[in-house]
Length: 91
Image (cartoon, rainbow, N blue to C red; front, side, top):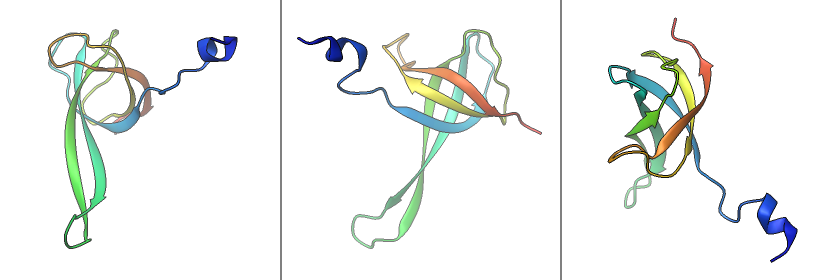
């Protein structure tokens, strides 16, 4: 192995952006991520929503905030993402 493989990951971690829909849990927020995909048969663009459980160590994010999350190792039964930054605060 060369030094190059140690510094850069071969399969970089996924990054998504979404809206916080729940902050009731401690150190966890639920983020709704919108995805636009073409319908397999009809080709029309449809919007799909996926809810991600995100680790928020400092309990910073509040409902309505737009946040950026990054894939990580499993932290609990449902949590596989962590909060990297809050892009925009809710008004």
